[in-house]
Image: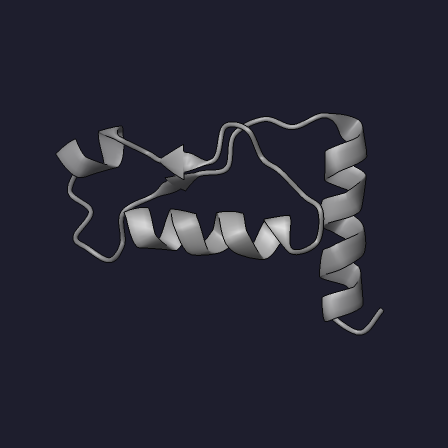
Length: 63
């Protein structure tokens, strides 16, 4: 899961996006989730970051 967070952080950074709260969701370790089904917490971001993220996702989807 940590590798997944690092990969996502790197991919977002390649588009100029930073999610400051991006991390492994620690309570998912104590829950009934089995790896690799642990949760990744995307956290909070400001509106400018949310718009940039939406723009990148739309472009990737071909819209």
